[in-house]
Image (cartoon, rainbow, N blue to C red; front, side):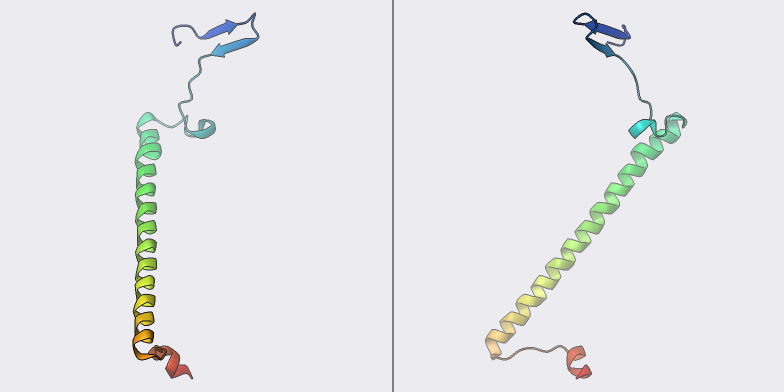
Amino acid sequence: MPERRSRSLLADTVRLVYTENTGGFLSLGANLPPALRTGVFTIATAVLLLRDGRVRRARALERLARGRARAVRGAAVRRTGSTVRCAAASSTS
C-alpha cells in the first residue's frame, strides 16, 4: 500500500491510510537519530530482558535450594524422630 497513501472503501465509509510510526509506543523516540533509536529500542531492550532473565533464574535457584533444605530437614526429622533446630534459633532462646 505504500505506493498509494490512502484507499477508500464502501463509499468512503472505511478509509485505509498508510502511516509510519518511526518511534516506539506513541511515537516515543521518533525525533532521535536512527542509530540512537536502534540502540535504545533494540540493544537496551535486549540488555533489560537478559537481566530480567538472570534475576528470575537466580530466584528460581534460590527457591530450589530452600526446597532442598526443607527436604533434608524433613528427612532428618523422620530418621531421628525429633525436630532439627538451627544454631541461630537455639542461641536466641
